[in-house]
Length: 277
Image (cartoon, rainbow, N blue to C red; front, side, top):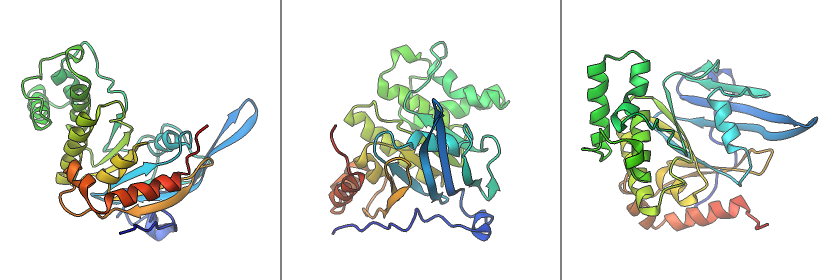
């Protein structure tokens, strides 16, 4: 089967009725962003719309330097758009959105805290009782295959284990929406598959929503219900793919073995229009 791209937009509702319905955890409506570089206006994001539905995993891919991280920083309130609207659960973005978890390529673990201490950090800041924070954090480490490593410091853990601790730290706060920026990019293939599978399982079991920015097309297709392909700068939506792989969507090898998998990967690669410099 040859997958077809939906090039209309990123299935984002527009207009006040759709924007205020609260059905979509995240709606981005015609957002643009430029930077002033030495007195010259450099457009990065141009008239971009997308949505993230409840319980949906969406991957975003695009050419290097197209503004994917700028987009993520705009969505989470770290920088303001020049135009357009961003709404979380129907409310205009003001500051940083609530009940949203972030995970970056760097694990950013505190070296003086154990794995358990790192996972507990967010709960402590929120004022959760110490005993409850410890129990919840231990349980999350166990679910991510780190039973017996709670008292280990980051320097004694492998890269894959550190990313599992970072994932546990994100998920233990029970966010409704997750924003991931290349969190598995530095991992070897084996660890990447394992952590992708754990992520898909915990997101789907919890009915959470995940917006994943990645350069890895295979990762994007194997994880996501929908893949949004961005254009070169000023970036906009170039294509949208509804991913139909069948089977267990938490099994990353099974996803890659699907009859449709290579077709999606080839078409998305063609959409990226990558030219070697």
